[in-house]
Length: 115
Image 1: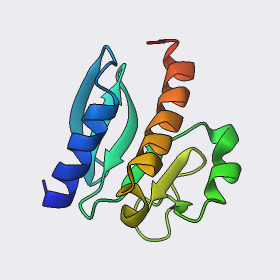
Image 2: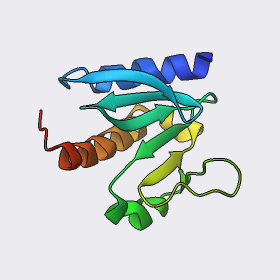
Image 3: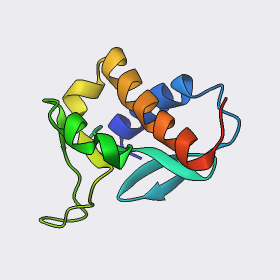
Image 4: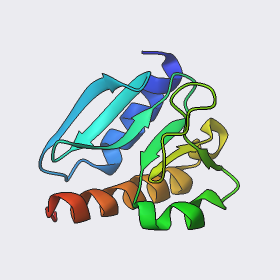
């Protein structure tokens, strides 16, 4: 992992320390964090964040200045529910916490698990 990924993963781990079933895997060119066997976020090599969020909130969240439509390669949108968050914005602890919690909310809805 890059230094940026390592730092971001450590901060994400601290935010989800109370979650019961967590593991990390290499996926989407980053280090994905899985909760209850579903990806919530992935730390990119440059310190950016891929967030798996509720597709119903996609358009609303995409309006945020730090958010962009996630792509699987240039010009190939990952679709609703996948947002890339700038590395610059997630250096801020509150911004990172917002995106991790938003992804966790969707994860809990999908898995039916509540901490």
